[in-house]
Length: 162
Image (cartoon, rainbow, N blue to C red; front, side, top):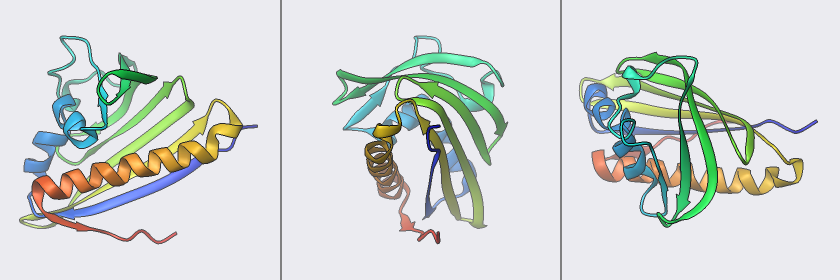
């Protein structure tokens, strides 16, 4: 049996939830968070999609995860199971490295001009021995994503209690 890993990351950003949603609900926004180290591809018609327009419960598209924008390091099959417009989404996908990839992103207004963005990740590696490495890599990627969000919108990291 392969272990399921859980990680959580949060930032309070200096922007209203709708302004943040306008960015994070797009593939361009995802790639802005991942860049410059990682980029996810999308087929032509999906590259401009908004998360709230995606079909629920079916694979939206397959994406190459590219290190440095060119070196394929994973193949991700994107599937959303819930979208709450302007407030968040729940992804339940698979990839070559993960038997299951769960990503829940919540945007919670703290005040009129401040929003807490929380990412809750649940993933099960395809190969048990890769678990500790994937925890480090996924952790580094999401810490980077939150730094990119804070750089774009301003704000602070929120400590997560275990």
